Amino acid sequence: MRISLHRWCGRHWRCFALLFLPSPMHCPHLQSVIFLRVRNTQRGRRRMSERVSPKREYVLVTSFGTDRPGIVEELTAWILESGGNVEESRMARLRSEFAALVLVSGPPGLFDKLTVSQAQFEAQSGQSLVLKRIEETAPPSATPALRYRLDATSLDHPGIVNRLAHILRGYGVNIVTATTHVEPAPFTSAPVFRVQMELEIPATASIAQLRAELSTSAAADGIDVMLVPS
Image 1 (cartoon, rainbow, N blue to C red):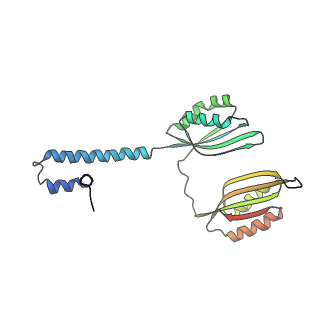
Image 2 (image 1 turned 180 degrees about the horizontal axis):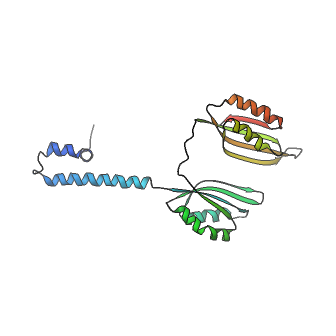
């Protein structure tokens, strides 16, 4: 095995000095060189660590306004000019309105910069904003969870999402994402409601019992449900 003498000396400079320099009087210059080299190496590692893992600030930006071309470009340009970076987002047109939910990261002070320019951006763009500073990392889940996907279909009527959410809550299920839309049925053009959810189901919950309750209780409201691992 080939070992770099420079690397070995950097890690074990004290041993090197004891082995090859019996007395400080023999070669004090070499000892000084070794000491300075090790100190500079340690400082360099600390600086590199700071560059690799800088402290970040996270802001949740909620935006909504009348839909028109250019909304996303204006919103992301404002975020960029404030020193922010878009990490995650959910955007959709809801009838005549456009809504965006954006997780923005940036250096310390990002929230203050966004807040200072918020009113001016709203006046110029016609969008309404809500800003919230959030923690860098999400709190760990108290119990292990299984990822599942729920797909449900029904003739459109009030209370579909509430019915499903009520059943899921009884089993301690967390709804991570949910997407819904209404589309016309083939031939009849009757409005059909579709919902897709990404779920986190506690490992202690019975998947069989959850499926059974979704099938019976939801079916009573005319909702067809499918629950599969995601």
